[in-house]
Image (cartoon, rainbow, N blue to C red):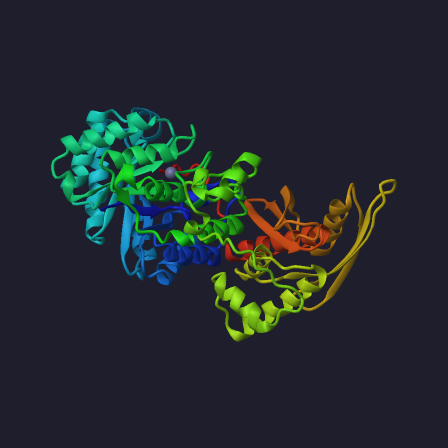
Length: 516
Ligand SMILES: [Zn+2]
């Protein structure tokens, strides 16, 4: 069976999504989960963007051992040197060099003619060749490049010994048949093309990223680049889970397969959504909450008689649990531990004790604790950021005829209890104003979203906030049985992240950084 290589760029292209700014710990967590998912290559970042980016790529390269780690680079020596530095500890390093080739980019961005583009790219590949045995070359905006010139550029890259030539539809412009035709033409006209891999990198501006990637596969692409949940700039990138499941479900048609561990798809999707703060729409293919829900009466009737009447994939394939075994306040430590192992979390005794205590508190406030509740609770502490401020108490007066007033107390890193009172337009506003006076951080709330983790009136509430302080944008998350407490927790979580980012100098702006 023909193998399709999966190149994940959640940590690079995905991280360029507006409002997303992952810290090093979060990148490592996602990198390790991508390794479990079995992706072949992980693009960990763009080391030349900032010293923080370089350090993150280096940390991911150290942590992940069973995937090729890729660093992005423009066609210039300083960038290539930054990737060398970032990947010096990688088990299997690869450099990804790009240069734009389309007429519009040549004219307005690069101010280079065709020959200059060829010469610059060749010089970069030759320089990188001294240090890397694996090189991927991307012709940025390849999809809008004259096919004759793209063939020439690809020939140059092949002649210079790259391992992969990537064809990006940088602006998400092509239709599947047009995009497929590019691969067919390169396959037919570039000498030695069978010695390298051809790769497709698509954007979803017209909703065709997955269709274009699949068309590329049908026409000879060996590798698909994309992200988990399809996150990325603008409308995002190809969703890797969609490509993997299309190849799996329609194997009869595509006759090609990935070697992904499909059962890790649901978990990877959830983790990426949590850490990036980007919710997955309910109707999103494969990983949306409704993707396997059959609501209508006719469908339900059919499903009960025979699943395949309406179900082309089984939720178990992507690791969604069908059993909804619940825990309650009488569940013991053993049952709790077994359940966590079942959900994929093996914990040290100390961590387990902390989690068990949280579970007991939760079970006191909520009749049944579902898998989703447990995951929300465990993943809450997945990434530790220094807690400069911790929530202590909230007291609130609210009436629909009066102005809400909140009294909030928090505990500082030095163990001091700070208390403040404020009025607001609503309860959340009152709490946030009170917190502002206590933390003394000038922050702007950019976005606030609330959703329930599970079903039922006593469901856990999960609040996501996006917060900005000058160049730094962060997301914060809080989970509680009470939405006002969850709101306060999310706010403090975000403030702690702002402080962490500022102190680590990760707030660098990446404006005007044109990328593949
Ligand atoms: Zn891209």
